[in-house]
Length: 262
Image (tube, rainbow, N blue to C red):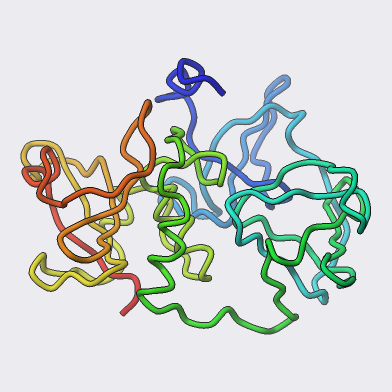
């Protein structure tokens, strides 16, 4: 997408759902469906994050692979392939995309898509989770390593993927990779977790910024990385970046911090 196309999305889109991600259909109107993304917590709807999508973007799948191992994409972007030779790409899929595993063949994992049949992904780009296994509890260093993978990624309003991230989509997605579910929006992230004083910040803690010199509504979130710096996805025309937490307007707009690791 071009920068003007990305800017057009500002205020018009709510969030992003990944390939194969489960949604609940609330209602249909013409060629549009109102759905909720189940894995994205929001007080807007108890079932998940709500929004409207073209009906053509939603496909029904009745397959049950609940007893299978699963893959979670750990690279910013990975390719799905038609065969284990990886000679013919099928499509790109994002960071955090989860698909059932059918088989592990050498350097490839055979996965089942919801509507496009069996495909293959390079083993090095995913983590394979056996049924019932859990992702290890992350350390501060684990969270930062994941966050820094996106340094330089262009901002995308409502983005929650390796194709583009907004500020809260960035923090939400980084924690999601480590099986820690936090709310989707910055204003809600600022009310969950454990409050942390600015003097006690630890790497991985989330920093919140609000209008009216930090006393108004929360409008932005970043992640503390230590040494007085944070990493964040600031706004259209910019990329994920690292900067001082004392840079303006962030110094003046700081409104609090939260930990999701304690």
